[in-house]
Amino acid sequence: MKRIYFILAGIPLFLFISCARPEKGPKESQTVKIDTVVSASGQTALQFPGKVKAAQDISLAFRVSGTIRKIYVEDGARVREGQLLAELDPTDYQVQLDATEAEYKQVKAEAERVMALYKENGTTPNVNDKAVYGLKQITAKYQHHKDQLEYTRLYAPFSGFVQKKLFDAHETIGAGMPVISMVSAGIPEVEINLPAADYIRRDRFEGYHCTFDLYPGETYPLKLISVTPKANANQLYTMRLQMVPGKLPLPSPGMNTMVTIYCNEDEAQPVSVPSGGLLQKDGKTYVFVYDPSAGKVHSSEVKVLRLLSDGRAVVVSDTLKVGETVVASGVHHIEEGESVRPLASGSKTNVGGLL
Image 1 (cartoon, helix red, strand yellow):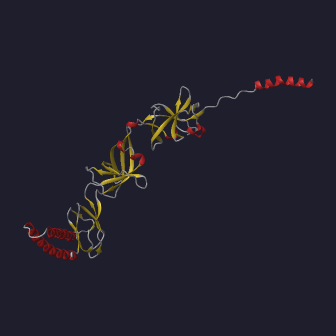
Image 2 (spheres, helix red, strand yellow; image 1 turned 60 degrees about the horizontal axis):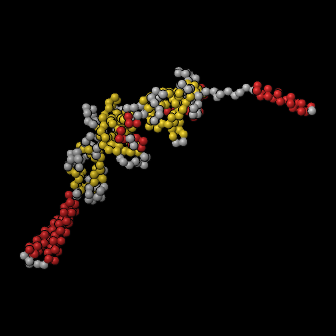
Image 3 (cartoon, one colour; image 1 turned 180 degrees about the vertical axis):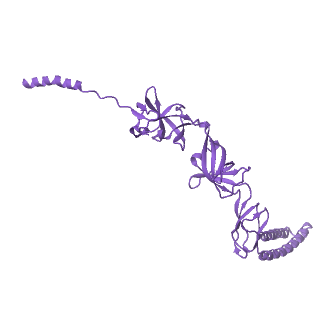
């Protein structure tokens, strides 16, 4: 009986202790830094390093082999289109042509005699066909040897400047070996390399200019020539731009420059958010939008167009609007629908290491 009495007496005491135990309170709200979503519509200025190149930069070679007889120009010389630059010793080719010319005249005279007889039915068709075929053969050979003699002379294909002589007189060279390198005197070009992210939106490029350290404060307008449709080994696409002549002196080939491209972003209607507020999750990107009336945050999916140098990012979203506030940092410590407290503007504290 005593044991039952003690058990019954202990029940009220247990209930009293349980009821007196304090309940666990709600989770304390985090303090977060927030920032405002601003419009990024209009043009974005993209910048790429580039190099000035001549409109034409080629190496010239003879189409036949031989010994160089004379080079008529020096390094740096200005030349006009069609000017004789160098010449091979033509002796062997002249002897070859003379022999072929004598043979050509003989075969031609015989062929003309046979064809005249054939017209008067004085010979058979077979004999006439052989004469015609023989004349065609010797004519082609004669023309080939005439061309070879002509190929012993090297002419400037355009007006420009001689960069460098690669051989001197009396040296023997093979056909196709570069002898003289030259650049055109025309308007120079600028060449840059585009990453794939910018190449795919090239249709929205609206303007181009370049600047040089040599001419501080001056800009040179550019005109698009072409963009290669295939990436190089570094996954970059080559863009060629032509300089537009103006009052400023044109830079020389080989100079480094900085090219600015204006890209129209209006089609995407982008907005700017702090890049520290971007959260990568399951292959998608989100920001946390702060609702001041409820004191809570909810996620909004965005697509990043470009990271800016000022610590912000240009994004597009179906739900994010200009003027809304988003969490600017520490997003990996926040959950969907969580209550937060915005950090007071101008605060010097770093609550939770979120700044």
